[in-house]
Length: 163
Ligand SMILES: Nc1c(NC[C@H](O)[C@H](O)[C@H](O)CO)[nH]c(=O)[nH]c1=O
Ligand SMILES: CC(=O)[C@@H](O)COP(=O)(O)O
Image 1: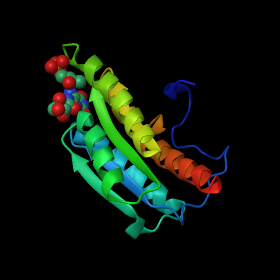
Image 2: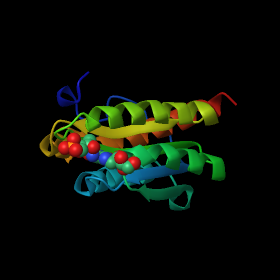
Image 3: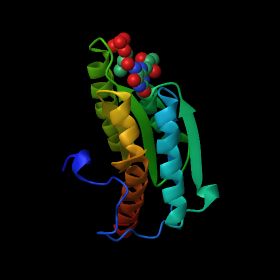
Image 4: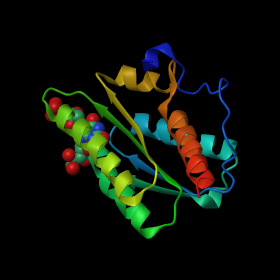
């Protein structure tokens, strides 16, 4: 379902497990910080809402969405985490750079997750303009950061039950 047809922060239709046992990394890109800061706040507050202890959240900032890839890899290599949430905002400019960044980040984060056999959550907005991004960072379509955090909790809980 397209984001504009759903609220990215409405999880009243589903059960979210308690996140108490789990440890999470959050990587946030500084590019478009007026958007990514809202994504981060949404993700952080959602983790706390469902029981994550503050000491079990490791947050790092990187320059842009492309650096989310390396940061997620470094976090999973150096820390025992149950999932890593990657937050960014890529907005179309005048050139095809948007296409290359979005493609690289999508494939890169997927490969990091496979490398570590850990959930790496794609919380990256890829929009035509800033208005669309703000609509999905606490605006009329909810907050992609909320969605990313709850996805991380569900994935961590799923993996835990398979051990
Ligand atoms: N244009 C956007 C970027 N570009 C920067 C890249 O992500 C990267 O930091 C640079 O190419 C150096 O490796 N990043 C975003 O997150 N959002 C954009 O709109
Ligand atoms: C996604 C980008 O890197 C983009 O914002 C860069 O803008 P431009 O294509 O105008 O150089």
